[in-house]
Length: 467
Image (cartoon, rainbow, N blue to C red):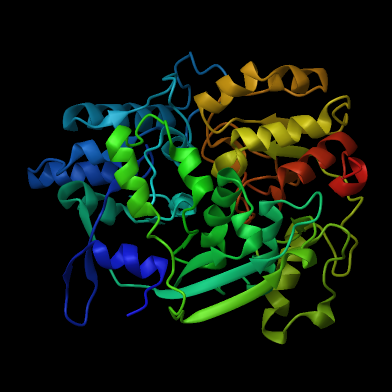
């Protein structure tokens, strides 16, 4: 029977099927960080058991770590304790950890791919919703709760009901200035933050196949923001070229065997999805959010919807969002003044993102009214940015390259947006208070963030940078 890419991987990892219940699913890779793992380790310790397969677990602190002065002791007590606890738990259980100041430290969803730990055909979990990032390699990757983190540590398996399947096809060629971040913000604006609920999504079509691996990761990263269990993209030559030669990648004869298997990881031509959507790349323009969920997005040159265009059942929450953001229905987005710009996170903290931002601002100056945080997703990204002269370009334009970490994606470290301030952010969530109590977040691409950084306003990167 014809199978989807998702079916092929899922079915090959089912250890046991519970009648009228979930599958027991084998997990190939388990990533952990300092926030969601302490209770899980405490649980297995209380049971008097060990981590089942420590060689398949990788740890890195990222959420709570500072992005300046990382050589000093972390001054926030809770953050320091969580990072120290992760180190202790990993040492006691023989788990590899890339700690603070380690050359491989960084955001867990940046480190996995760049180390070659993430590979096609795998099942991957982490106590973090944006584990969906790894699906860009043709893997089944999704976030799990703390009790499931404990289950995965103890058994290398978790119990999961099999999701429904959706395919989203994007055909055609993207216009200049339009990025993968714009693709995913466009899709979410069309189907809403609940449009993918209950589904695992495969992204397909010529526009998707044309993307680099880092761009594909951005799309899969934000599949969770449409309510999906995860997102994935079939592996191809772009995937294989990216993985080849990395630290954990198969070598020699094992590489050839791996690629031969990976080439089978495609949806069969006559496979059936529970739902299928189609969009044209030509219809996508640079996007930005204006509200308090990722589905409240609009093209930069557009206007916030008017109240009469909003469904009656959504008008109250829409107006609440407008009040929080300090906007009014029908407002023009372009030209609105902003205060902060954040380039980073597991969505857009990779070297291609820094390259795009630096190329755009080169020869220009940061707007005086803007505070900008440029944060690499890992130590390796930071090292590469310095080697390529990106750091120098940024500094000449009035920016500072900070040290790696989750940073201003979420208010769990020192990088918080102050109350009432507007931040154009390349991260993934714009909920109330996500970047700090009372902060106002506008999600956008690195190019749009660069345009905001040099103009001090919401600006169309195509116009500002003559794209």
